[in-house]
Length: 324
View 1 (spheres, rainbow, N blue to C red):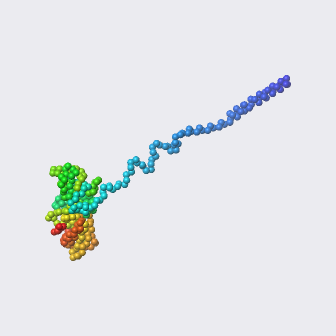
View 2: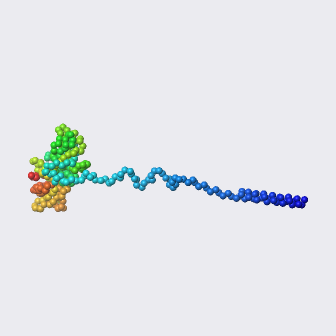
View 3: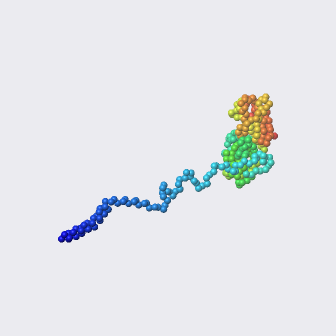
């Protein structure tokens, strides 16, 4: 019996040893905190990582790039090159120059408008100019020293052109200057433009836009008219300014000199603008004045007592002489 109990006890102990580790393991497993699962890494994309949201639009450029060619600073047109002065190329030679253009301004049958950049004012519509005038481009106007020059102009490029030349005087500056392909431009009065037309086709010619014309410098001829001097409204005993008009031959001037009463010495006047010349030496001027005119070709004409002792601003004084 004692032996049996010993065997049973040994069996119980053995059984206990077999069961207890499993239970302990379970308990330990149960209370052992499970390691936190590592966060799943985000799937790797083969697209470019969008650090900043990548757009398919091109990034806004600092300077907007245009596909159009960048416009250069507005260039001067290459057709504005000044040719040789017409006065030295063709004056008196009889040769026609090509490369001229013509338009008209003012009323269709008018004088182009009063005033102008030469200073002739209302004289452009009266004899001897008689509305046969034009505003000249830079090569013709010559900063005003071309005022008064005479040209023959003719056209053959339009069906309304007669092909016969007309004589015009430069009395203004053309605001449009030169058109493409031109070396000289005449912005003519409506009357002068119409004079180039076939009879009855004046309006058609004036509606023709920019006409291609031939031209040449010619002598100015004002039969029965002598040189006139119009004193500027702003003139006074210390400042004298005068408009010179109706010169035969060259028609324009390169120099004007003034002699005071009792002086015996010529004082050069400055070209003011257009056909205007001035003397402003800071001294009181003593009239009457003699004026010495030098034409574009260098011809000299002396006009004694051109301006009387009692001269008035705004008055016109007609001389008794002109270029022969």
